Image (tube, helix red, strand yellow):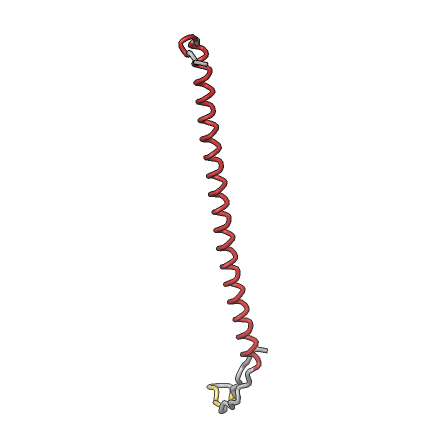
Length: 100
């Protein structure tokens, strides 16, 4: 069966052309939407990774500082400071202060 396009009317060509153009636009919009979803997903994954790494870093710093402070609080200084005279209040012993 031979398809003879010379018998078709101009309106039929316009209709078929409009359908093809609509399909091309729909395909473009679909590809653009998928690309946008992929970029949003990649950005979300990157943000989650940065947030997790920085949160772990801050948690580690806080843990290390807490350990350091508790260790420093348990250290006893075996030092007796000699008494010194103050200009107008007499004598007083110096004391080693520690974290209580």
